[in-house]
Length: 288
Ligand SMILES: [Zn+2]
Image 1 (cartoon, rainbow, N blue to C red):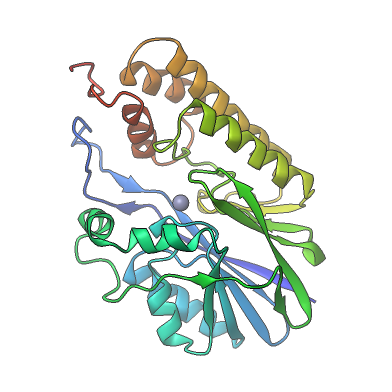
Image 2 (tube, rainbow, N blue to C red):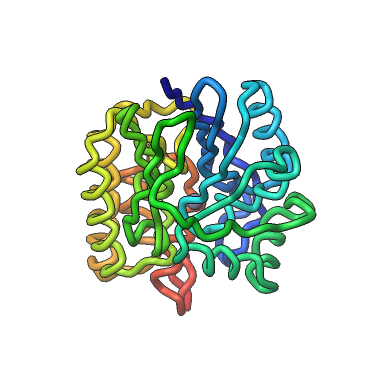
């Protein structure tokens, strides 16, 4: 029998990197999850967070289960899902870190000078001292005590390529950044075409018919079992964002419209970055 346990790291203060963000509002990084799928003896971790502190806390949490960590699977190449890897692997030196082969070059890119400098600027002094990228997964499945975890390619989420992990024995999906649960979605690297491909990724997750969907970014305590609601809300967020951009105003209008429709979601800073990224020549107060 398998079980799933989810470690949620809360919203974290960051140094804002975009001009025009209201300095009276604290810029934060969204709450993030790392998920342990475990049997009687073995465990597999999906994603590994970003700061040294949360990776240490995650490591203690895994250790407390008494399970043997065999594998860390990284869903996509964004640093906030794997910079904590070195801390986890130092604690569990027999574990291997893997990702889909096409994800590995993106993960490696995040560890290169300018990218790593960006992450360091968000979390000054907060990242682990050493960085490692996942290695290419060579198999279609990851075993846990004789059960199967199936990485599934989904293409575009908040980056492309992305994947999710299907756990058929539990009717569960560990969803990376395909669906967000109660948190603004990171659209900064998307255009309309990418957001349309993202809808197809949601189709793929829906097609797996999970009873439980763990989002890579979910509000602490969020319900993971209202899968239909989570997918529908994620779809609506994408189409509302398209409509807000196409309405022809500027970033401030997009922020207003999205806040009116989705203001209950956590991490407004994400919306700010998503909106301003659509208007590279403008700041959110409308000045150019
Ligand atoms: Zn993410």
